[in-house]
Image (tube, rainbow, N blue to C red; front, side, top):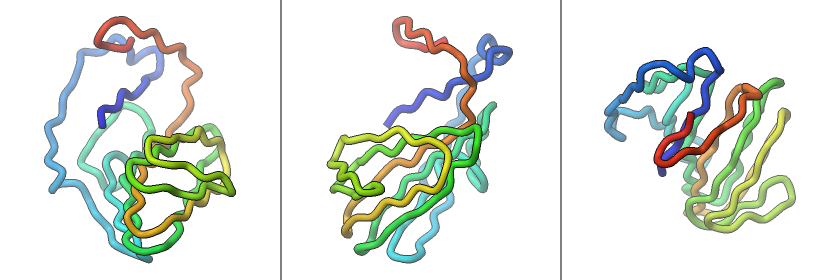
Length: 134
């Protein structure tokens, strides 16, 4: 999965950066029937120029995952494998939902896997041009 992270206006013209980090170097926590890999955010070696949490959440057993999106942030859940129930709505593989501030809970059966993305909303326009975003 390739992700582009939007920046605040005064950082959009900064020199490009690259961090080559092995998946084995990302923190992984197994708890409550879940395996949570922190791709970006607290405890991750990935350093970004904005507040972003990116988690790879795999359900190892039938379970639920809950997290809070704080005020001023927005989020996205993308289903990589299986299907989940997201606050009463079913999402299948390749399905996504945009999330606003507040408590979020999703549940599913063993084998379901999602990407959790949340970050500060910048209110900046996104201009798509060719193979890059500015």
